[in-house]
Image 1 (tube, rainbow, N blue to C red):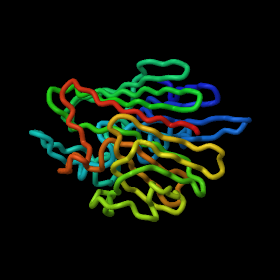
Image 2: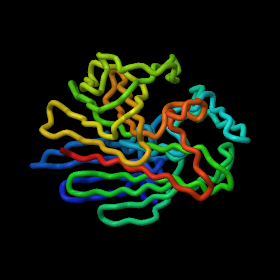
Image 3: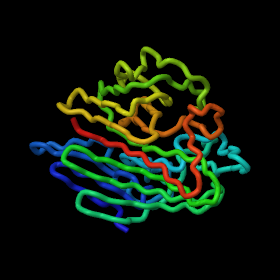
Image 4: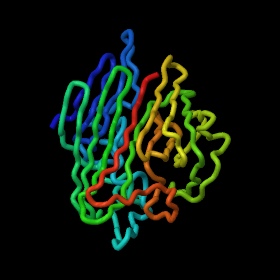
Length: 299
């Protein structure tokens, strides 16, 4: 399998790495000989393999898929209907299960053209006691990259289901994120949700959040499915729009890093253990499919 498949349309190029979690390895444009990276580009080492997730692979990519859940499940443990589930703790000494299975596995190529690609991933029941099928459809046009992500329950009982994307954007001084949201989850030292509050005035995406001066690793509810990213040194920005059940947004702006993340997802962190329906975890019946999409448009 090729480590990277390149899609091209006009002056836009997208790279996809099926063997590295079905991740986007690059998304860039070129105008008048000037190349602009809209997602963080992967290095050759990141494209190598999945043997050490903490050292590279999907964590060095521009974007990876989140299936069948987003973010963390506390201690990897939950009860769903008649099933008690204990998931492997899949990220070093981190005490919680994180980001599902899709990013940890190779995806198969199902269809390919010059500007589109379809990848598939099948997960057989194991510690996660449901079999499911996931699919990603990548489409490139003159101004945008669209990723459609779907999840189908192939088991004989209802399955808890979530999905989303984990894009990494290049950081530069003064870059801003603007998005309409309703509330923010306060988190504890393990980045687990504690309490829903109004967004802090100093870190409110509703009025425009300065990535350089704001440190966050928080989920937001009531997202209106549009986020605008602006880099001061560029004459264009990126508009990220979503469809389907992606009503939640995770914003990760780590200190002293060359990236930041704005993650469209279908549920809050640890939603499978939350009593509130608003947490967003879907109960997906046998044979049913949930689908969402995210468009990254240069504007």
